[in-house]
Image (spheres, rainbow, N blue to C red):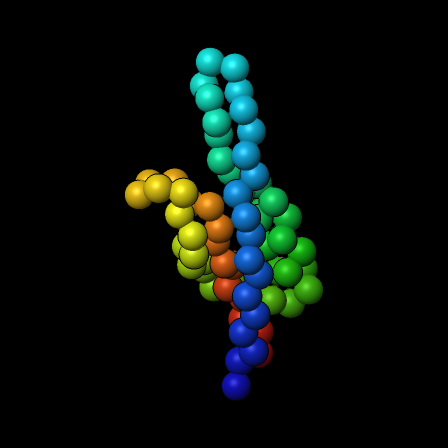
Length: 66
């Protein structure tokens, strides 16, 4: 049976001159890379919370392992 693990990631907000607020999930790349190096397989993500209809605030990364 496969093990499943979930990691919640909140958007990082930046304010850029002339562009306004930018939300990103750059920290997710490091989490995914670290988990893969430790034998986990990235299975996808689930959007959890939205700021509005189009902007994500929080996602959950899904990993699995034999």
